[in-house]
Length: 557
Image (cartoon, rainbow, N blue to C red):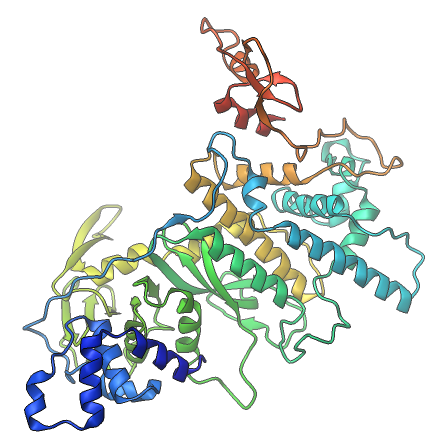
C-alpha cells in the first residue's frame, strides 16, 4: 500500500488557500465566534480531501468523516451529476496515415527493439548456461533478432492454423496437410529456440526471488507501461479476472469452476468497456504468507485503478469486488464505480419489500446509490456516481423470441452496457492464442500477453482508422510481416518461399513523369474505369502507387 503520509501532504498542498486558513483555525482551536468563518466545500472530492487534511493524514482517520448521513433514505434524494472523465481518450503517440499503416508499425510500439533485444540476449544466455552445465549433441547457434521475430511470427500463425502437434507443421508426406512454415524456419531450429526461450537470467543477483513472478516480472512491467503509454481509454472500463490455461504443478494455480478455462493462472484485468483494450493488469500469485488475504478484492481494484486517481474514470465490476468501503475509497480518490453487489455485504440496505417482476426500489446514502431490481431473481446494484432518479432501459424476453424494453435504474442499464470489456478480450484473444503445451508455467503467460499485445495493437490501429476486415485478418498480416525466411538449405522445398513481408516499404516521390498506379490498375482491370496516374511509388519495389493505395500494396506483398 502506498505511503499515506506522503499522500496526505500532497493533498494538503493542493487545497485552496481559503480552506487552508480554515484548517489552521481548527488546528489552533475552534472558538464559538469562529463557526461563522467555516464554509464547507460543495465539491465532494474537495470536501473529503479538506476533512482529511484537517483531521488526520492516516487513511483510517477519514472513515468517520466520509459523508454526513448515516442512514439510507428512500425519498428526498439529493441531486447528483457525474463529473466527466478529465483525460483525452484515444491514441497518445503519432502513427502513420491510416491508409499506409501496417500491423507491425503499431505492434512495434509495444514490442519495441528493447523487447526483442531482451528476448535474444536472455535466450542466448540461457542456452549457454544450460549447455555448459549439461552438454548436448544438438546443434546451437546464437539466435538473432531476425530469427526471434520470425519465431514469434510463426507462433502467431500457429494460433490461427491449429494442428495437434508442433511438429505437424513441418510434415511433408501427405501433400494435403503441408504448410509453407518449413520455408520460413526449419523444424529443428524452431524447436531449439522454443527449448531455450527465456526472459530472465537465472543467476542474476539483483532479482527478488521472493517474487513468484520473478521469471517474467520485467516482461509484465514492460508491457504494462507500453499499454498505458500507447492509448488512453474512453472513460469506461470493467474489472474482472481472466484465466490463462495451465494444468501443471504450480503453487498459485487456480480452479474456477464457472469459467470456461477452469484450471490455470488468474490475471486481474482492467479493460476498456467498448473495445476490450487492456489498460492495466495484475497476475494473482496466491494468498499471502500466514493465511488468506483480507480485503483482496478491495486491494486489487485499488491497485488497478491507481494510475487513474483523480480522473473520474468509471469502473464497472461484478459482485466479487463491490462493497461500500471500496466505493467510498474510490470516491475519495476521484474515481467513479458501479457494480452488482451481494446481499450479505455490510452497509447496504436490508429488509427490502417483495417486488413484482421488473419492479425496482432505490436508496441513497451520501454519494452512494443502491438499487434492487426484480428479474427472475433480485439484482442488486451499487454506485457512487449515479443519480437515484435517473433511469435507463434493458431488453428482456417476455416469452418466446420477443424482446421488450424494460425501464430500470440508470446504474443497472449502464452496468449491463459497460461490464463486457474483459469478456470481449477473453473472447478475441482465446480464438487465436497458441495452445501447444509446455511444462514451464511462465511460457503460458508469455504467449498470453503476446496475444494481448497483438489485440491491443489492433484496437489502436482501428482507432487510427486502419481498414482491416477483422482481428483474424490483422493477426495474419502481423505474422507475415514479422516472418523473414531463415530456412537452412537442407529444409524440404514444398513451395516457393514466401516473399519477406517484413522488408521495408517506403512511399516516396520516385518518378519524374506520372505513371499508372499498380493497385488502381489491378482493381479496375476489366472495367471501363480508367486508373489514375501518380509520381509516387514504393521505393523498394519500384512500382507507381497512389499514397492512398500504398497500404493495400504493403498488405498484398
